[in-house]
Image (cartoon, rainbow, N blue to C red):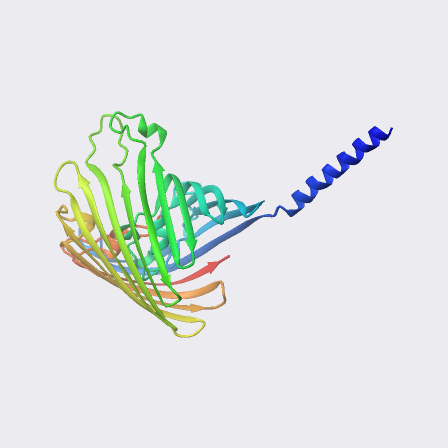
Length: 366
């Protein structure tokens, strides 16, 4: 009897210890998102008769791409956490998704005092870090995001950490296993890169990054025409009370397997003024210069493309704001054709060299 009683007491104690450990483990899942919509008009678009026209309509994602997502964390003890994120974009105008169920992000991993290690489809370190230096904060309406930096990578292993003012990130992305089996591509490497940044207090910060994206996968029997794409980037930002000046540079080389490599230099600079707690104003200038690009590359009419963008935003609350944006592009279409998630690409009509657009919209964050 005494032996049974002792065993029972030991079992209850062990159960109590296990229950206590479970009670200390904390986990949370957050539903979040952005709904962004505007009414836009832009000129010099091609019409069915070969002339030009002004296009008006609704566009999704003026300041931020419309999206929803789930973000979760579980405390594993001793400073270690399990993390995950699933994020999907959509077009608010028609309700369509942006292609995949979780096109924006689908990742899981671990986080501790040593940093964060995650696996899946993720934003590249260069994209994440450069967001502080991009004049429009990746506002898709009138910012040529794909021309600035590669955004995401599939099958990526990503490490990131921050120590005081220093931030670092690096990733390696595998190709899909099916792609590795094709005769044209036996390499498992899809992309890789890294970024490093440093903040000198709250006033001045700098960063640099590099990305290499390997040759796109092609179907069996198809001769590839593009090899590796190299991107080297740098950025700087100065914050003075309610004013900010920021900008960056990106060099890109697209290896061509059928002709000369296409090289380009991309420059961006912007300024912002937070007039008061509700009102913000911004201006940005973008310029890309091409070398050995085919005639009409990305809709350009010259080897030098320019765009000026303007932004005004008014906060109705902490989560909802009204905004107005406008842009004028020379020697090519707005954003060099980029139009955000499932938007109609910008294009110039024959014989036109400039394009101007403007929009008024509403963004709500939840």
